[in-house]
Image 1 (cartoon, rainbow, N blue to C red):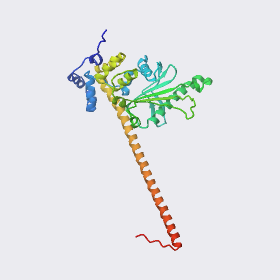
Image 2 (image 1 turned 45 degrees about the vertical axis):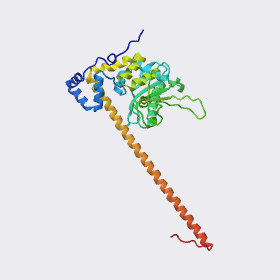
Image 3 (image 1 turned 120 degrees about the vertical axis):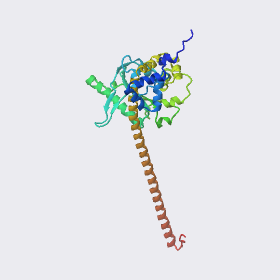
Image 4 (image 1 turned 90 degrees about the vertical axis):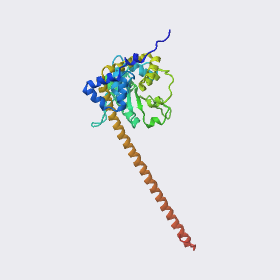
Length: 345
């Protein structure tokens, strides 16, 4: 039996003209103000989506929460985690996104989705439009929060029966739309799995597991086929054009409801504008912080380079001084033995 082909309208809904879409946008002053506040490129993306010509990427936190549904049933999160971990997983509970405050005046650890699995391990999924500087340092703060969540829950519940062997693994999974220099340096590799081992080969059970996905590197590679469920999820997070979307659904039809959930937002342009505005606000805040961190890092690197240059000059001066002293001593020794050394011209 011939497989039924799927059309763009099956995925994105019935098409609308740009005139109709603009009419709806202009009908509500607040929606129009938000629309006009976006860049030309973002307005074009929104128009293509509202017209039914493209999907919409869900890498922004507000869209990610909407589509991935971090509440029962957890089928979408379970599908994603199973594809990444290579084995079926079941989610037991969704945990609060807000974690520990690093200091009284410091920022709070806030995660996109954090869940407890049936085996009591904890997994966090992070979507980043921009890969932050110092990814290792930031990652370890998230891991520390996840471990302490588990410890603080287990210790009181187990009481005197608590044992550290009761602690279960924590996993941090990070998708980056634009990865930082550390990851670009190892392209075309786009899956970065943290591996912990000891020099002696000692079989110590460490709890921390991290996987980074560089979606920009993934998009730069030639992709002819979607062969695995993980390929499907990476394609889902990476592309919004009809060609890639149809190819994905043709191979994995179970992704059609996700795209249809995204397409359902077309009926409420004001909600799309609000979500898009919130997503841009978060991205602008993160971009500003990223740029500040990047500038501080550049200044630190320049200060280090200048310090190294000053040290090199000081070492050179010291060497010249020592050489001059040695030459003076040698001249005096020669003259003491009746050998005349001509003066420098």
